[in-house]
Image (tube, rainbow, N blue to C red; front, side, top):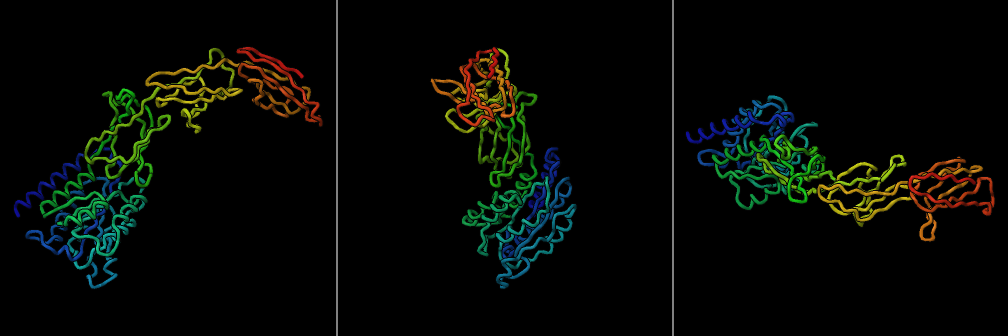
Length: 459
């Protein structure tokens, strides 16, 4: 027993040191730990010289003494299997109670509640986990953790795995930690789907497991995202990246990637209790799904994001007002970006189809974007046509291509004069006055636009 007390002392010292070094970033977020303790009759079984319930309540009580020194931390205690005997039937399968709710400085209340637990009932794990959804008050900046401590498997036909998944999906709590006390192999396998599972074979290993779990909850876990270029080097940066909860799909973190003062991708703190889907908002965006974070470690996530640049230019004066370009992946009909003319924009390396919103539209297919290279696309300088009409009417401009007329533009019916910027080519303008009620009154004129010239058309 002297050796056992020595281990307890070392454990408390380690916890104190760990909590003293918690990062500033994490201290801004409140951590809430809900302990869900097995109080069923099987906890009266012995571990060496003590009953399991005595070991669990004593070590949890000692843990409260260490946790109460921590800022931005709240704890609560739920117990099951301690209010009704097995003979109570259905009542015993709903035997769970939040003995001490979350609040500031409630550690002495938890210690008192632990002392009063008298195991007698069955093991309603699924029902107890389901009830925890009501244990965490609403909070916009809280990390919610469940630590389940049990020595037995579900005994009330519930499905702890399904309940755990539902809690995560609905963002009620993070993935639970499960500490098994002397479980057999079959029971251990049944708990692995509930959360991060840790097995304690005896009283001494229980204290070690408890230390590991608390360390993972409180430790500063970091992530470095390497955006890999076409040469396999992490040189890409200055792009937004979003971490989503893999289960609920809710946004968890949103950062703009950068290099630190050492010239390497900067490190960010992240909660290790979740699996993540990462979206890097390049053009087009790239994704990496089902990312598992190792607690208490520096994690490196590599994402292929090689980029090059595209610039759209005219050799002379751009007469267009706010000219745009629709950008699609080569062979894809979906427009994923609209680029301003005369600007340089980054894209993931590859081939793209462009549709520039000139009059008529200019289409350029299979434009290649290469790593760290600026691809320039030039289009002819436009010309200008000014059309004078004798009266208000229906007026359209067509371009002549391969002996066909293709519509380009409709003039306003309420004007008698309009100036239009057009690309070089052969055109026809077709007009009929609003007061003309016969098609034979339709008039048309042909004209040619060359770069940098101005033409006047009068009817």
